[in-house]
Length: 442
Ligand code: DAH
Image (cartoon, rainbow, N blue to C red; front, side, top):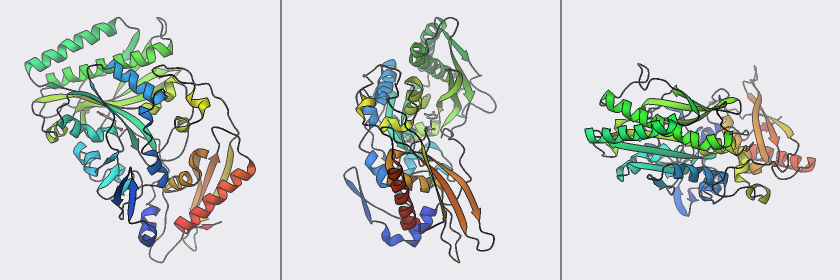
C-alpha cells in the first residue's frame, strides 16, 4: 500500500492482549450494515467505525469527494463507473488475491479493522480488482470508502475514499493496435497542452516486465497508463492551478513497488510550490487476471486517494471537515465544481496530556499500540480530536512497568470549546482508558 507517514516505534497490540484477558466483555455478535456477524479473537472494529459505514460520502451530491469522483468519471466516459461494493471483504480479497506476502504489516490487527478472522474492512479499493475483472469488465472505475487504523492528525482519518481505475487489452495484434491508436490520440492531445512531464523509462532492472509478458506489450500498456493519467491530471489540476505558458503543470513519474503490479509507479504533481504524491499504479499482475479467469489479456490499474486530491484542489485544511454536517461547510460546494474552501472559523487549540502506567502481570509485559489509543479517543470524543501524539514513554527500571504519555489536541471545527468542556472530554478519555485497558492514571 502507498506508504503512510512514519509511525512511532511499533508496539504489540494491547487490544489483542486485553481481549484475551477480558474476553467476557466482548459481545458475541455485532450488527454491521443491518447484518449480524460473530466476533472472535481478531475483532477490533469500533462503534465509531461501524457508524461511518452507511455514510458513503463519495455518493453525496455536491460533496467535494463526490465532485472529484464525477470529474474523474467524466474524464473516462467509456469506462464502467462502480460505487456500490460492500466495505466488508475477506483477507483473501484484500491481500492474498493481490499477492501480499503473509507477513505484510497491513494484515495485522494494529493496522486493519477486523469483524472477525474471516472478514475485514477493505483497506484499499484494489481489494475488488479480481471480482470486477471476473465480471468481464475491461475498463472500469470503482470508488469506495476504505478503512485503516492510524494515528490522528489533520491528514489522517481512519475512513477515507479511494478510486481504483483499470483497463485491460487483448494480448494480440488487434489488442495492441487498440493500445497504439489510443496512445497516438492521447499523445497528440498532450503535445498541444501546457504540461511538463518528468518521465522515467517504462521498464528497468528494478521495475521489470512480468515473466509472462511480451516486453513490447508491457511497454505499450505502460505508455497508455502514463498518457491516460497525465491527461487526467492535466484536466483536474490544469484549470485550478491557473496553468499558463510560463507556468505549466508539472507531473513526475517515480519508480514504485506494489505486490500486484509490475512495472509499478507513483505519480506526483507540483502544486502551490510542492511536489505532492497523488497516486500509485502499474501493469496489473498476471496472477490477478488469472484469479479472475481472464486469459490472454494484460492491462493497467491505478489507485488514488480522493481526500488527498480534494484537500489540494479545494484547499480543505483538515480531513475531519469532509465529515462535517455544518451548513457553513456543505453549502459552500456545488456539484461538479472545484471551488476554494473559505474557512468559517478557526478556534483555538486545547492541548491536554494523559500519562498512565500500563498494567503488568508476571507473565506478560503489557504494551499499547498508538492506534489502539487513537481509536479509543475517537470513540469517546468523536471529531473533536484534531491530533494525538505520543510524547513520552519509558519503562520503570525497578518494576519494569511501562509508562506512556499522550498529548491530545481538542479543537472543534464548528465552535469554540470551553475549558470545562475540554476537561470533561479529557476525564471521559481517562475513565475509558481505565475501563478498557486497566491502566493506572499517573
Ligand atoms: N491500492 C494501493 C494503495 O492503497 C494503490 C494502488 C497502487 C492501486 C497501484 C493500484 C495500483 O491499482 O496499480 O496504496
